[in-house]
Image (cartoon, rainbow over all chains, first blue to last red; front, top):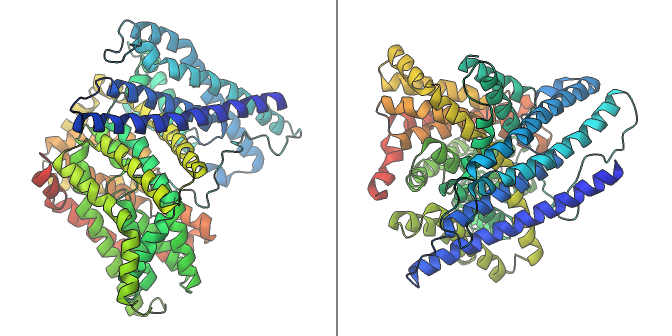
Length: 186
Length: 427
């Protein structure tokens, strides 16, 4: 499990770094488009499809990382009223629901990709089949999320059985983490 | 399975702390499994395409811009400028807090950057000058609600995409209400201090040279909202492109001021990727959910039900206020928007209510909900920071409810407050 933890944290670093690079690429491309349109009077036609593609990847990479750090948008009020043991039971229940959803997606996304692949993007220099454009990034994220959930379920089961669990079992984004004093929201 | 049960299922799952995105997917799949004539593959196939929206791209761009501006020393410059401008009025730093939030709201699309950058400075300064902690926390929480009203606003982007409204018009609609709310909060602070309810020192007015110097230092940052208004009014760029240009402006500003290093630049991009991931996962599930509502004809049924209940737009708006206020007290705003926007906008349209006006009513209701117990999220943010109890925090925020309700009433029943600017420039 320690090896899996290291592996997942390594993947998360790559995901977040890639996501950050894609955010910069997005800004650069759109600024370039505005410059081309107003200064050179020559719009770049592929910008819209390209930036949406980068956006989809940012969401999927960020979404997978959010699973690893357990920071998906969640309303955490109920568990405050529970004992530690009941809290673990609730966590386990939540993990099983998440696994159920992820298994459904792993089983059904390939069929959706096949259907969507019947059309492709139309303006990009190298056109991509729509299935790979929309849903392949999601499939990649879902597989990573599934591995992450199994990792957490292992420790939740250990906790429930009263066995020892390392204090640092929650996956962390080391080296890149910026310290924030306030947790906010949109 | 009835559609009502689907909504109940989602609420129960969210309450049991299943992440919101997974609650929605689980609900829609279960709904199709239990007696609908559609293959469940449909849900998986509708997730990715839900992100195929150009206006939606404004979200990561304004998040990035907000992080760049919030992470640099710009927040401190804005605070100093606000301090020079209104610090001498009774209630001093309370007004500074509100004015800083108004200015910062005009640059940042995400309250997190506001809370992490500006909010921290505001709280530190108020505590350094002996302001009571509950009073400081209440003002910081109340002024944080200005952020999503004044564009750029992440929540406006989400509402515009889900309700199919022109984002530039919605952005324009937010300026007047945002400044108005700031005014309401400042008047409340003034009377609280004047009446002796809160005892704080009154600061001396700074000399003109200091005020002018602080203005000059903050001028490039103050130019951002101006640049946005001009961009929206003239239509030289789409809101999404303006997001990218604001990022560029923030980067140049950061490097010119020497506030931004390559390291902090990368940190901002990382933070933006993380926030975009978490929010994007919510938007992803909006695809199958709204599709399901469409094929089940839920909008039409609710429309007929509401019109049978009342034909008065005023009563409908009052009911909307009650439902959204209560929802805002219990749930995270984005979650409510995900469920309520596709349901409520068609109904509002059948009453002849302008969608821009309705979007602002929805937004302000939900924001007020974040300030109210039992689960108002801004209360919890400030409680975490100040270690105040919920009861103390509630007592501190309570004086701001009355002006907020008056403000909400004005926004609800005088549509021109929100529709004036979009009507003037929106075309």
